[in-house]
Image 1: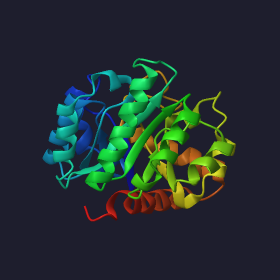
Image 2 (image 1 turned 90 degrees about the vertical axis):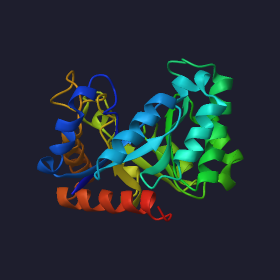
Image 3 (image 1 turned 30 degrees about the vertical axis):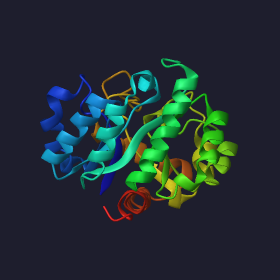
Image 4 (image 1 turned 135 degrees about the vertical axis):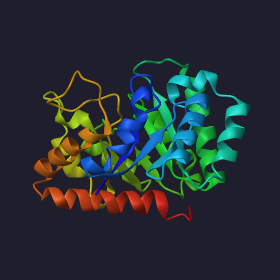
Length: 257
């Protein structure tokens, strides 16, 4: 079975189809999905969805795009909600210098605050890092003692060399539909990620894999990600399913939740 480790079913493009999508998961070979918030309201929605369905888990936090809206109220909610057994990580948090929708200094401050929050909650962190790898490494280095519950690089998009830098923090790496794009030079990156550090995701409704690129993404297309990884690593498809499944359980469910 497969676990899609990064979904946004609370996004407006999928919200009306949540029930349909969730009830069809097993037909697509998917055991469960992780619903990820990107701010205060969407994190509340993620938790509500997870509490309603046994095969949905919640990841809560403030995305770097929304760092400008981070508040003590949001932080208090995240910390309190982290006590719920359906909340399995703090994310997606980090830095995004590609769009710069929040001031970079604000992004860095909110990133650091949420790393500390995750440590206090005893949860892993799910990172969104884009065009900000040096600053991300600096912040991770400064908070190394707060990262003992696990780190996942969501939608990893940097180089094979940078994989080795992030591995110094015992990171896991998740890949989605982008690895199927014709202009995606992911082969050497995926080959650089050890099999025991590899996870899969869709990031739906974004990043729809080929041959459905341009359409709305959804969890069933995670199967195309599995196929591509098997092709790149030259291993059996079933081996990818089994390895990524075990890695996901080890990262998100070994800390007593």
